[in-house]
Length: 162
Image 1: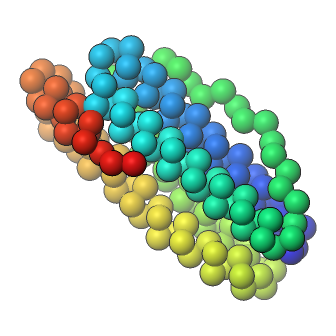
Image 2: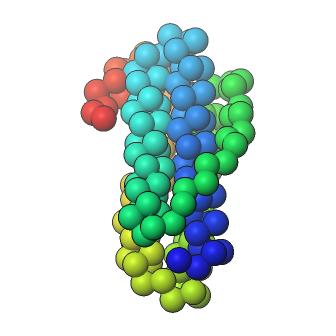
């Protein structure tokens, strides 16, 4: 595997694990304000990000290249509202989409067809990764993030399977 692509995929493992940390931090905030359904949704999201990291981890090992784990930055811990959290979540997923697209472009540049095919899954996954927080954010904006509607949304999010 090309060294630059190898390094970039190792970096993406870190990015996926950071995403998991970020969503756990958001879950913690939701727990602190007694929005257990929102917290559950974020915990499921964190597990999904861990799976993404492991998918890349396994791919690198399958290709016979060493995984080099990197330090993960501390995510933010203070938030002002559910709406702010979902704005940040959507913004974060858009950044991840850009990272995946950059990896895909790099795989094309270096002619690594196996990586290109592998990264197709992530490209498709990012459509869903942006759609989910976007829909929740639209609902939060419509209900102005408060009152009985917030509690109803909290109960709905508690049903997310993971």
